[in-house]
Length: 122
Image (cartoon, rainbow, N blue to C red; front, side):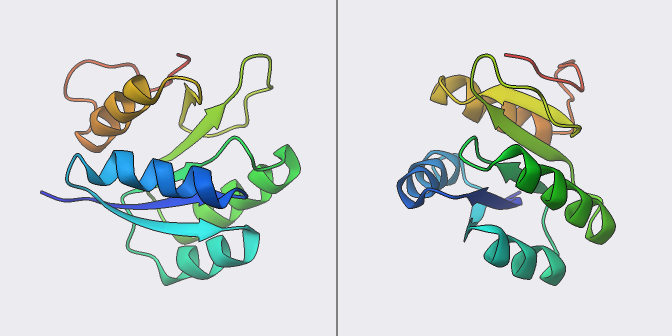
């Protein structure tokens, strides 16, 4: 069954690439370019997963996590670059490995039924 994902980034090309990767696995992706669009989509609700891109400044990621937690029970996945501090969300994955990223998204949406740990540090 197709899941709904809100993907947030401050970079239009990264959003497009991420959407293409995820939709190739059969899920629906709503892109949000910037904080304002993310807030609007989040409040509208109905998502199964929130993805925060690595282009989002840490301060904004923290605000978005707070907003998402207040509006929806969906898990939050943060894309990270090596050496970045992790933000307090449900999952983390490297932004440098698209194949692993798609696998992690699928595992999260499957409810970790494959025995994958709740916290990812890939």
